[in-house]
Image (cartoon, rainbow, N blue to C red; front, side, top):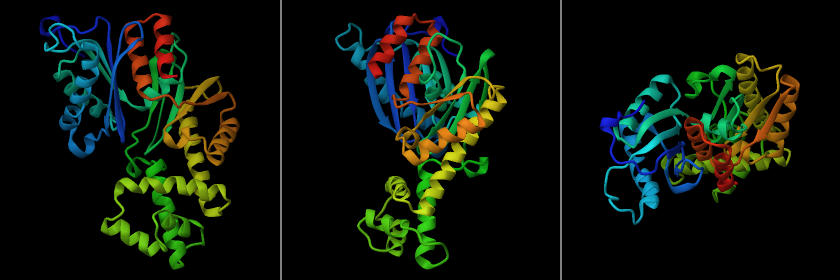
Length: 343
């Protein structure tokens, strides 16, 4: 989808891609030349269309686009003219349903940034960054960061994906959910409703408090903000690594959920018995916590013996940019140059 030639304002870079990776917690924008050079970048906050609406969420991308493209246009004659690149490759969090992708694409098109626009869920950026270049994309990606999601591609363009909207769509896991689980078990341990766990002492101590009751009050009344609740997740992993049974069980369940997503996607794509990359990413998986990572690898070996797990730590915007090069039919050296920039 995009602009007609009659509607097109001035082209900034022939063949250039505007790559956008907009996640729950941060957004990266990169202007990529047809030869794979990175001409400009920008970073901003999270992308939350379910909270503020598609129109405001996309409007929040505009200053980042202006900053990234401004780096390439510095000193260029006529730099006040309207911007146009060849293609926008936007991989967006919260674009979980086809109707959401359509609404977000329409909003981006209305800004006139490019001749053509494609929008995909940000899990596809992780998947693309972990797959070989100049081959038909085949494999599955599981992202476990603030939330959790999975997407896969098979020959012929077939895809597998999940709504990933939260508990209403059957999801379990991700950093936010793990923090809540740790808090739940710790609260019950302190008041006697649940088994004892070191989490009941480690979580308050992390915030300089003594008891879970103090921590609960601080969260409920606001001194500890929602933004700081994610700090509980590293505490959970530390307590699990020290041997606490409750914390270890939470981590084990997260591994089970990662593998369940991957194997279901592989099955849907008829790849369960074939060699297929399983790309793992997002802050929780990219950290390679031994308890989590080793169990994921072990379970994958049992349930999908030919799957090849790999952890991707490159910025997700790389995947959006690679998808842009795919759209342009870029040469091999362009992919190599782009990957070298983000290595």
